[in-house]
Image 1 (cartoon, rainbow, N blue to C red):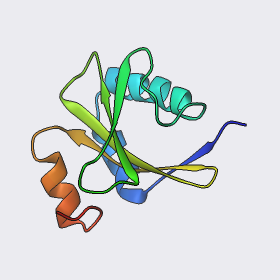
Image 2 (cartoon, one colour):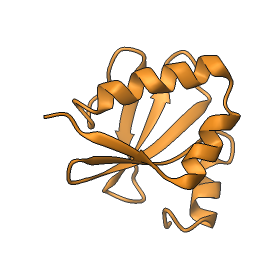
Image 3 (cartoon, rainbow, N blue to C red):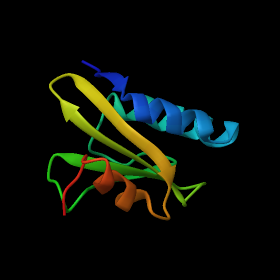
Image 4 (cartoon, one colour):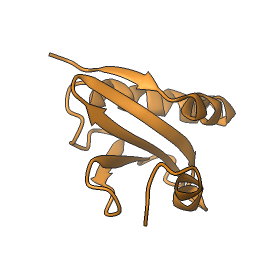
Length: 100
């Protein structure tokens, strides 16, 4: 059974700031995550965050400098943020979503 996804308010803001081509790539990757949330797929890589064992990051193969940060809660894929690699993890720590 596929999951459903719920973006956090800040994730919606970050997603809206991305160029259209990057948004399309992320939407494709999210569709793949709904069936296999912990596996990389064609066009994207996923990896568990070392700072928090229940959180994951997604990196696109085409746009390598952009990240998505997410977690799984039951049948829900919770998307917490999108953004450029530079300073992405520091911004997440500032918002209290991950701890060092």
